[in-house]
Length: 204
Image (cartoon, rainbow, N blue to C red; front, side):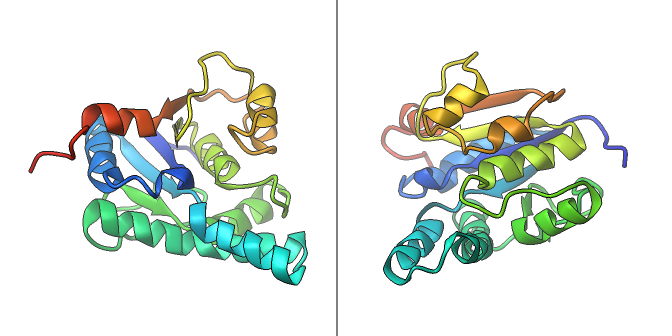
């Protein structure tokens, strides 16, 4: 499985979903990455949080609630497609996600991607320590692609990933997912980016 150069994985944190200018801002951000082939990984945000609440009320257990939360990521991806591109986008889930003629950017369908990863490469946790941060990292790893994490907080450059995980800036499995990574990883305080670029909303 040999990936071409100029691939980018963009993880969009679910904490950004309440920002009124997320769709337009994300569209501008992705345009700045061209001509790279880009894969979007949508965070769970309030969709996954709803499952956490249900688990708290009904004691579903971590394995069941995590599995349900994984299924909500399709809703999250569809949501991002609608606010960013004014309509749904084509999904990709295969390990060689770049090997497609579908329109760009692509949106990852996480549950089936993780299934493929486990069948072909190895197991991952089915617990809350494994979220879309790590899924995006695995998608970047198989492609040796640049990984960009769009967050609502600043992760100072050079912060060791175990420290970032301990502070809750990335999920607990992320340091394992990026161990010995040969691809570049960048974290951006995208809430700040949006407020600076579009303080009164995007023009047009």
